[in-house]
Length: 360
Ligand code: IPM
Ligand code: MG
Image (cartoon, rainbow, N blue to C red; front, side, top):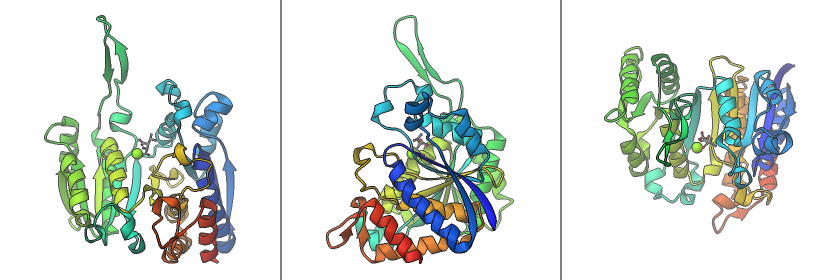
């Protein structure tokens, strides 16, 4: 039996509820496909601050580094918002990304036919949308230095963040973009702000140069402001979008709303070796609904499917989960975020149950 070590980090807010359902799915897959998933659970983010005073302990970082994959729920909440930036829950996420070298964040946005009316956009605009945002995850504004807020002699303050990218950083994420495109519809759009920001002028130059090595992939470029507009105007034009960290953060939230709910979108964050991978829903900890049992576990369950695909090469198991999700949606089961009159509203647990049931 193949053995896989998985660090399970539920985090805060709805994190524990949605991760519990995803873990049940993972265990069922282990049984069915005879894989030995060794799960080790630990607190991160606010939960870790409450228990240990810091958002990510050395122990938990070690656990993540020693695992084949990490499954993460969500971090953060109003309780910890007053804390200094250096010890906020979000730091745990950023530190995990940095320390594990997870530079490539894959965020697929796909429309489920039965959910078309759950989107705020017109059905004819979104029907058939199937795109992937490849977001650079360990560079740019999030990590660039200098950064911080300083007091000036006149009593005012000055805040600084730095958007920085080196050629190798651009090359490795562009490579992921080209390769993902190659396995899909072979269209890669690189998003930048090359008309204003020098860093992204370099980005465009490097991606353009690399395009010559991928003659089978149709490469184009777009400014980020135009892209955010085009995503709403005509999202079907997109296949794979590769972009820097902050632009990717924003565009992937926007892309998620094409699908009706951010509660549906999984993600994979990958490093340069197979055992460097973290899977998480793209949504946050949703403190307003935490503990009520009404969160949508689908994004996290689909993140497990991505884990099976990318980390464990268990493609059959992954598609079993994806199909199960589709069938429960076809049967009209909806958590509150995707509920519409005429469908059946279910809790987080009931949704997990139903997906498990379909997998049998
Ligand atoms: C995301 C989130 C994170 C980010 C936050 C929670 C730090 O918004 O994964 O998109 O900004 O990257
Ligand atoms: Mg985000």
